[in-house]
Image (cartoon, rainbow, N blue to C red; front, top):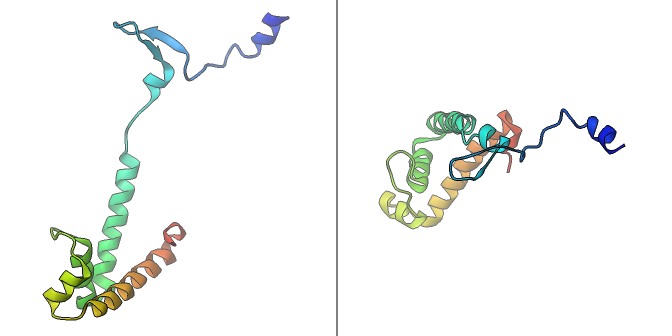
Length: 121
């Protein structure tokens, strides 16, 4: 009865089943062979979203908003700066930098949210 019961599982293979042993005596499993650390999909997705974000920054934001976002988040080759540092550079108050940054981020968030629901936060 045991063998008859096992017969229905004869075609199934476990992910952790040992299929060979390497030269050091370690077991080699299907998971070791099939597993892949390839991140092509994630890299492509990030690149597409980054390009779209830069497009929106260039086309939707005013020059002042764009400048503040670039400086605050270190876009391009700029290191990120604090609101206080940006305010000092532009000769405006920190609270004004905060208001402009918030408005610009809302514009970008709305645009991303309108196109792809997974970006709503």
